[in-house]
Image (cartoon, rainbow, N blue to C red; front, side, top):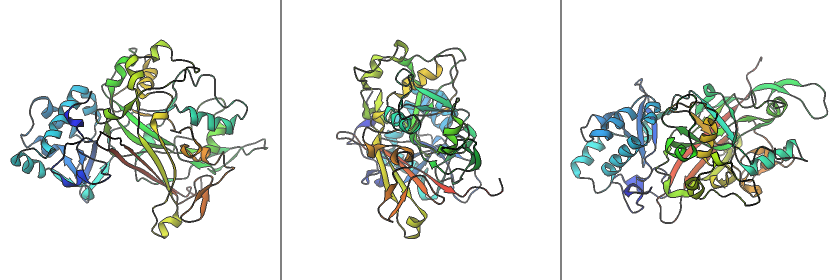
Length: 441
């Protein structure tokens, strides 16, 4: 539901929140966790606005808030956002509305002065993982990605029979979820080259990124009690950018017959700011399913989810090589698409996750799976863009090309929502750099 916090004409007294292409507008107010750079202070919860971070711990001590908003602010000021996510939608909404009023240009001068004292310039803030990731599940829900990758593995039968009937997923490794900006070493593992009988062990030769978004679970559920699709939307707190780095040669060798293991568990990067589902409300779009396709079974069908269960989040990936950095260049954009093309909604993903009785916990992270659009330039991974390594991807500004990632490459995922009649909502960026494989393994 839209309310005053979505009004595109609303302005903040923080000037930077009105800057062109600002990600953190008054209508956004994403949550994160930070410390002051150069200090040993414990992490604390904050909200991004313009080029500032609102320190929620300091705000809670000002006396400006009361009731449910005060309780929510105190909880959101903690070292992780898990407990705040566990409070549920009424508390999330109460704090959002209170922050919106205090940061709006029509807030009284005394309020502005007190809030101003709680601001930390983003340049002085060191971001931390926003949640304690206790559980991480990665879905596989882009029809275009499934077909593109399927053609590499199974050219004659690219799409598995179950894909159009349920949101497929695997349980990922929570311990290797890292914050944007964290570099990682090229992983080691087994792979078998085409035409050979035995595998070889060594560093990954087909390292890839996966363009995804992640979403975070709100209140805990009880073991054995599924979340119905009609209730799933209200149990999702917000979304971030996610890059599920993939060792394709290791992955394709080990996925016969089980799911991903070493090909996926070495690193998953997420962006630091979590954009709330309430902030994304103006960008909901219908969940489309072609009439010729199988229609969802009853437990995966809900009229409201069908009406506006998808989200138009614009996404793009930039690849910056060592040569780019040496010449002071930001890198080349190699793909761009929208989350609206995904075959299943995030509410359907959560409903599927719990339908067998699996309980989820506050702050659990779910990846949506690689996001690819219907055209070749909208593929969300190098394995698609390069057709399995047979068609190099050009990097025009340096004259280089890539089939897969090389040491020193940085991948930057960006995301935002924008349309006429709504304020821009940005996710920031999710960045990671490939380091050489550890020697002596």
